[in-house]
Image 1 (cartoon, rainbow, N blue to C red):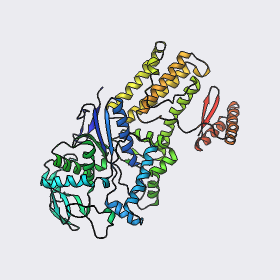
Image 2: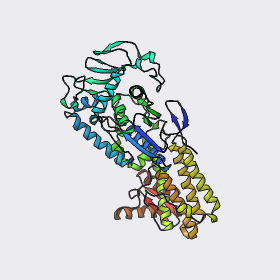
Image 3: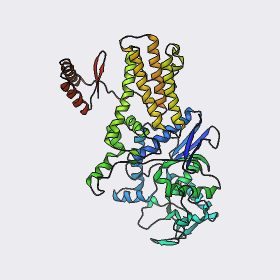
Image 4: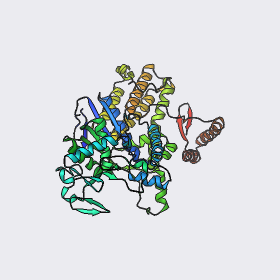
Length: 499
């Protein structure tokens, strides 16, 4: 099945056909590094990291670019508020962001250009727009004239007539209301480190032109995929299209992918309420990663189809924690049953499934292959990670059932063990296309000697309560341990526990 993608530009799904067969260029709008990242800043990098992994598995050579906006009015204001310099602030916030990306397993980005390091590329593009009559100088600033682009508004589906009323706002003399800044002249009170040389005087670039210049520098004047949050559709992406295509005379990006935003229920929370601030703190990316770990947060993000909004809450995260734990329990079960680890070199696709003794287990083989087909069908349908993750989750259930049917924990045949191991490795390889299961999770079983002794006492007390048919007591022990973050797992050889 060929890959089909939803293109914001055409507002429909269409076959994915790169401009250059076999090669794909992807540009994703990265963060403006003036404040610490929240969970919303992780959505794009995680989703496009998965997209690149999947495209590479299909045989494409992919170049993935994510920019860093370190030249912006927000940085100037925040640096002043913190009594520091713009470069120091940008470097500090960028370092925290990169640390978060590493914890999330986002490691497929090829280039992360900074706006401050591409002023020459930006100035050259502005000069080209002025030469073509599409930009004009006004009081030391340079603006793009939207009336010079007949297609302006085609990405966001807005009419140009709405953008063309003349106005003078805060000292800015624009020809049309929709004209936007390509270059901003430096203000007397602004620090020296944000003043860059240009033919129009000292100043700094506008936000939109930064992305156009950097994407063109590393992917060419035309490339395949441009991505970002739906909140960037207008004006940022619309303006990128206008200035880039006017400067080059070529199609800027063939496919536009816009991911949904992260949201939480604010119906009962006043914006002036301290609860709102608490809710925002809960979304701090570094804090979430420290609390929950990178793999869980990644699984949380890919469990929603990328174009849909992500519902953020503690309950949603805990739900995904339980789902991810089912995978971990299966991996441990198979290792315990088969006597070898399922975590091997993630750089290599396992061939155990192809070489397993399938003829003895036709029904199981058919089910495993069916779940794998559903995984690939979901990914081929606009990179539906949620549907693919659901197919993988169902596969864990089928493998567990096979282990029970073949009584592998109390014996079973070597052929059946080989099948269980091979199926689990196939599951793991599918999960690795989502950037999951690359390394074993941190130890979640057992504990130090004292904790282990205490848990043994509780497990024994629960077992005695069940034997005495005091099920309310047994259930209470289990429920209270669950509330404390400890999960009990009843096995044929006894009860195990995990944090």
